[in-house]
Image (cartoon, rainbow, N blue to C red; front, side):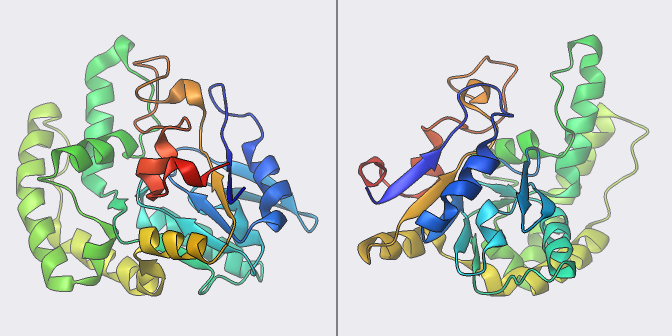
Length: 262
């Protein structure tokens, strides 16, 4: 058995994080493959309590490689906040953290759109976390307004993409919520270039890394977020998340084929 997956069979809160923590020492890498900072795992390690939303539980063990794979949507500010909290507690995070260059990035317009949509629904609101997860996945599928982690490390590309997208997003936001302040493309670009500078050493082709790891006999542990009944295709729709939180999401979210998971 080369790989293991830990997936919740309900709506989340099934103690997945604790189970992943118990299994981590039997594996070489822990992989997050879907969702964003709209779900979290609480783990007690070394007598201390850690709350993780984007970082895999494997980060608590420096000898384990932690992978944030292509199916995750990433708020860089939130991710850096988690990293800083761990480093403040003397938890090293260097080459043991890999971030997919194909993972999509959450921007301020995603959160602004989500808030406007929920407000417009009033009593019919879906009940999102207001963290831009669903709107980021929507832009991922739509492609036109999507930016990936690999794009962040090219300043001119990022600047031109943000300027182009902000013009169109401001039109949408004004129509949805006339009182909403307009987005500032220059300020957003400056913030995200700062995030990119810190995250660049971790950004890589995680799909290729995972396949090479398997070819060398490494054991992978896939850390599911949320639960199967929140799966966008197989859950209690429309009261679901925006990603494939069941076992179906592992393959598209990581690039690892089904035959590799036993």
